[in-house]
Image 1 (cartoon, rainbow, N blue to C red):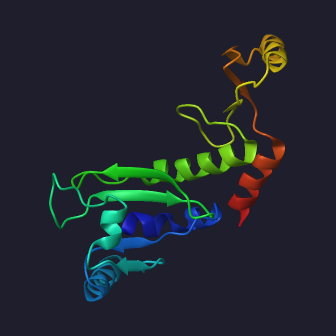
Image 2 (cartoon, rainbow, N blue to C red):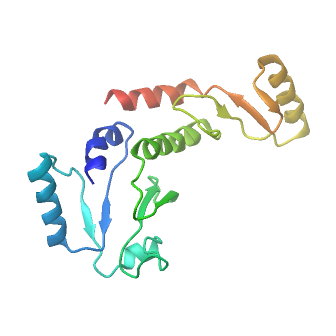
Image 3 (cartoon, rainbow, N blue to C red):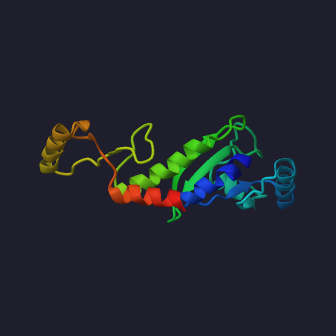
Length: 177
């Protein structure tokens, strides 16, 4: 909770809202929030939903029968603005979440959507993206020529391009907020 609270401004910069979910009670949440505030001075800037029945946690696979019938695993679920689950990261109870990777994942999803392309392994914000595969033989031939001229890939099915300027501008504009 503290790590997400500390990173909250960064999530806001990329138009992302945070929402906590816990199978503990609202009084428990208030006690955590108070304890965190008393010991660190940090006020949690996002809501925490009390899912006492575990119905929501079970729906999203947050309770691992292998671990416990009542303890949640540390899931991070990224849901887009259309309500579609785009990414589920599952951390075991004894491993902390990687906030930098969660931020990178959100930014990568936004870039992939904006550029209508894919982000490669180890992609960094505003780095080259993978061009969608050609749909016709003519496009395939054009792609091979593009790769040869730009030295930007290894084959027609794996070639790279710089993200469109509008996507970079959107990303940079979000950072300025």
